[in-house]
Length: 92
Image 1 (cartoon, rainbow, N blue to C red):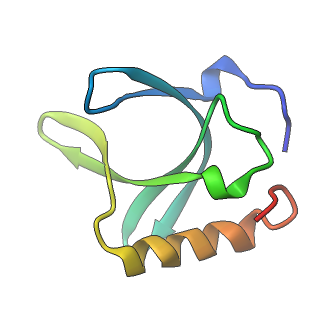
Image 2: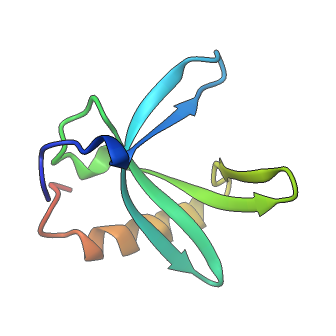
């Protein structure tokens, strides 16, 4: 994994306090006909795989957005998929 951030790979999300937070796009995970996005906070150590955030990609008539995953089992499954795919790129 390249430690230099490319501005095209930066996604800004707004938290509950209306603060913009920069994330580095890592990957899209396809699981059971759904897409999930793996992001790494742009200000974190780029080798810290435990800082990865995985969100569900949602499309609707108002546009596309990312949603948190409420199901802990699903979240764990997606993180295991991510860990297998990037086992040589991150410290878990």
